[in-house]
Length: 194
Image (cartoon, rainbow, N blue to C red; front, side, top):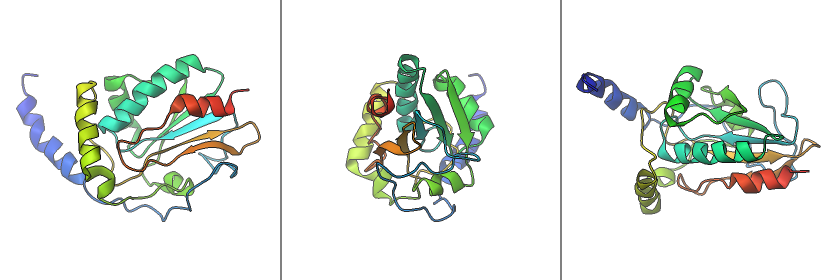
């Protein structure tokens, strides 16, 4: 880009903002298989469904999750797929346009982190995104083409993924141990496939 240098100060500010701990509500306890699905928008999602909570917009691990989501939504179009972002709709849509938006997903923006908290996802420790295994994972993601792009949201915020059966209960749950611990969305789909 001809004037890319002009955007660098803003990107640096965005990077610094992403290091701030999020100030959302206190999260509910971690959800487990068999628990009723919490509210998503105005009511719990009707199953079969898979709800994927991203790390911050621009995160290479979120990008790898979206790549996986793109493949699985094509294979499993009968499942309702939800993507929850802590970024604004505009920032999330711009990022998805850059990395490849999965077809057939419902996108939910949750900058207040209220939905994250209902689903048991809060801020984690600095080890969540800065331990050696995570940094090595970021290098592997880079080799796979995923990049640390313009961030929106907090690096401290936990991601998560949940599969909901037709009865409205959780059939599969993924709470990442650290930032590079990605969900197996094929396993999530298999848990609710009829």
